[in-house]
Image (cartoon, rainbow, N blue to C red; front, top):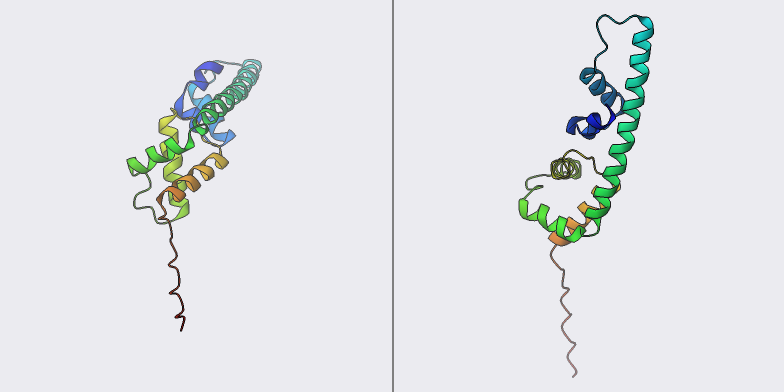
Length: 142
C-alpha cells in the first residue's frame, strides 16, 4: 500500500496532508461490509501507509532536487530555452509555472520552495542584460 501510494504522481504532487489522505482513501476504500473494528483497523492501516508514503516521497524528492541543484545553471538554461515563464508578468505566476515544470520533469515530486527561489534568481540573473555605465567625458585641460 505504501509503495503504491508513493508511486502515484497525484499523491506525490499533493501539497497538503489532507489531500494525500483523500487520495489514499479513494485508492483504498474501506470494505462495504466491514464492521466497526474492521473499519478502525482499515483506518489505522491507511493512516500508517499514508504517513510512510509521505516520508518516502519527501526523501526521494530531497534526493532528486539535490541532484538537480548541482547543475542549477543547466536547469535555468533549460527553462529559459523552453520559454516556461514567457508571458508571466508576476513573480507568483513565474513561481507557479516553474513549479509545474519541475513537477512534470520529476514525475510529480514537489520542489522545495527554496529550490524554486534559487532557480528563479538564477533565471533572472541570466536574462538581465549586463549594465555598462558610460564613463564621463574628460574635463578639458586648458
